[in-house]
Length: 457
Image (cartoon, one colour):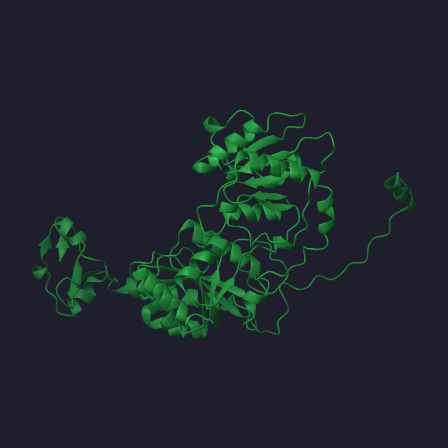
């Protein structure tokens, strides 16, 4: 067949009614070799042709595509260290949150294991050495029949399934790969519908079910009664939960500087406005600054600094030196990356109970959780109490920051290797291709006596 006024010829194949696929004929000689007559090519409207799903091309293009995929598979295999465990982070969907969480997770564990990224597109699996749309990532699109052999060739030892919709194709792909897998839900389906049944079926087959937040843990306990659930609340790059908290100095005659991140919409906006208004009275009224708020909605007494993704948070923390970061409302996704950024900067944190951060921030010094149903008066009273015990919190800095996290230690208990941990790679977007050599310590150069005296002065 071909479309009216078009030279492109398609072979339309149908196994049964409604299952047609069209295959572009690339090589005309091959078309004639199989006995097809040109005068028998039927013409149909372009709209009707577009309605037929596209299949693989016929002719040299199909051969070239297969050769390119085979070459990419060889390049992908060459990039893997032969003695390092291989972890596949499998995304059911390539949405912004799942990709960002996978990058976060990859950054946490890549010094101990090689990480491959995979995602499903139209039911087919794509494997890559780095995040999607990364310039130097090696990407291979797998056929359904090659999944088991690919898992064996690439030596994949473990899979972490970042599930969002819980479609039946997820179970099909995991069964074909035939490797132990963890299930990390990115969202929990409603109790009614097929997705909930698919989630329960996946959970029964999974080696572990991992909750990525306090709220997700509560939802999974309700949706998977009796299932053991691991709490993976800290996939922070290089474990910022172990970073030292850096509280800004607070003098007796100095006002608290509070950075409010979010809270410009929903019921939390009213709490923020009332708190700012109620705090204006007094000699040492707190100074409020807003992130991710709209300028028009900023109440009097709150200075909006703009969108967080357009600012250098490290520079902002150094210049503004906020005493507290207040999170009035929860993040729209299951995992709160705002908290990760605040932890990485070592900032003190005040969080509303609705944020669901009790477990994630448990035991951290200079960190306070507001009670449920907190009012403006409650927040103002809490700010006064924080100011009073600001100096006494300093004694907890060295005592409570060594709590072990789930990532990467407990998360990688399955990984057994004799290869040493890899040195920190130069790029944060791609998987390291080979272990970097351990740096040799250089003897410090002697400092001249004159320069020593200048440095001392």
